Length: 375
Image 1 (cartoon, rainbow, N blue to C red):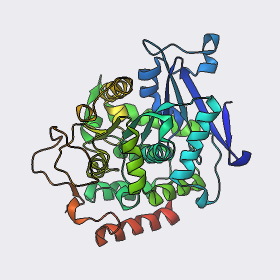
Image 2 (cartoon, one colour):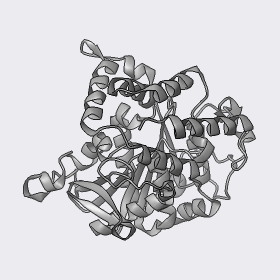
Image 3 (cartoon, one colour):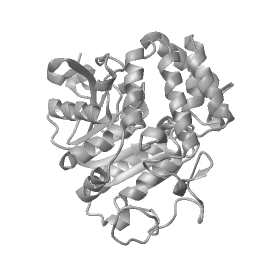
């Protein structure tokens, strides 16, 4: 099995590669996810979801002109990678070092780096740490970590949280995961004579039965990484000044990672960042596969072209943030629309001093996670 040793050999990171060619893409999955959660993107980018070492001749089908080779791996604490017992061994910086070690192990000098949710936080850290090794940066359903990990507070999300902590069987956990990952509208669509919810529920149950639930050590550790994640001004500037294009892709109906935080990050990263909002939930990569894959392929393509920064970004030029060059663009949301989080205008939520109600709820959630999460 392909493993990459890290931490002086104390930890192993399991990975898979797909396709083949000069274009290299590193996929970093989110909380509790495994490498195969990237299935729709692996197929869309590499042209196959068959691991390279299992394909005829040792390589899979190429992903178009020039060929694309994709690597997806299990973060520490999940899947077939090692599960450190100490929460201090889980931070987005440490996990970014894991990803860099995978690049080194594969002999990839530079790559297009794409992350989802917690994986997008890790991708940000990686890009700030080694910007010279990043060709482009794709951030799906990302937040800035800490209190920004707290979902929108409404009856639906509270119900989901309660059901999550009470879930004891694969069937119960699968039902909760569906409401967490997808928009309500998507789940209610019919595929033949069954709804997507019915079809996906069966798939999720089979997956849980075959792989098991994430261990408590891994879950607590990855939660710790999300909670402690921060991107400093210096790190943001390191990404902005590197010059590679950034696409921030988010589902408008994401109940886990609020879209206002993704918009805020995109504003900080302008003029190198493009904000793409799609009708979908937290797993917008599965719900809107065609649109997401198209956006990622465009990101990869534009990184190989000499594109002026203001021609790439589509963010407004009157947003607060770090100093930047002037650009002419179009708003991605309704003119005059305030960025709202938990019903509170974003302007009133300082980056280091969030609204006290949000902070208390976040602490309560972490407390419940600590003592009620399934073993």
